[in-house]
Length: 184
Ligand SMILES: CC(C)(COP(=O)(O)OP(=O)(O)OC[C@H]1O[C@@H](n2cnc3c(N)ncnc32)[C@H](O)[C@@H]1OP(=O)(O)O)[C@@H](O)C(=O)NCCC(=O)NCCS
Image (cartoon, rainbow, N blue to C red; front, side, top):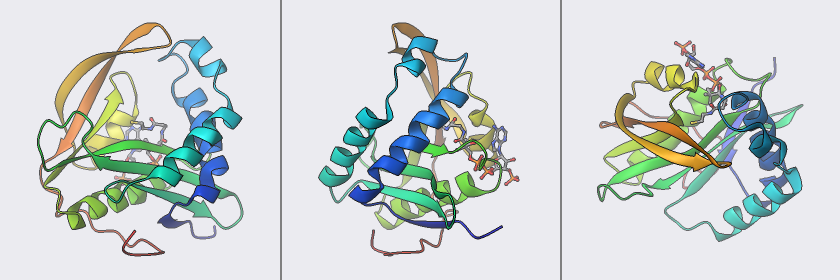
């Protein structure tokens, strides 16, 4: 199998990121989120969202994609300062998705390592990621050394769902080779 590379995303990746986002949500969250919310997702609308997000990204946020030489973008991760701002120096992984068919091949691990490494170089002390309480991806974060550290309820598609936060208090374990633009 050809090697998947991890690189900084640019606005031209918006359509590919939207495709990964919508397709992965529809598989991963079936049964966890209301069907209507999943069915109503729209790749064109998401492309506009991601294009805007990538164009307006500040210096303290980032997006990396995992790119397969044949299939194109098959995963992505985004992050920046913690949105809830519980502490000054805690970072947050906002999104992490790997396309079904490319999961369990080590891509998510490399994307998370890239995020952790970026945070560490950005002088963050710790990081957090929120995950649906019923999401099997909790096992992924546990395998990466994350520990449950908070819980909350949010509303998605008119239904209340539980989320759990996984936290890392030491980012020194994360170091990842980003294949392009080490300053990104
Ligand atoms: C969660 C996700 C990002 C993980 O990426 P991935 O490429 O499938 O994971 P990797 O192949 O890098 O796995 C890394 C490790 O986590 C473990 N792992 C991965 N998914 C797991 C799961 N669902 N349950 C338990 N362990 C899991 C693997 O066994 C592997 O362990 P190892 O390094 O000891 O072999 C990906 O599966 C995904 O996008 N899932 C659906 C969407 C989602 O839930 N995203 C997270 C939103 S918060």
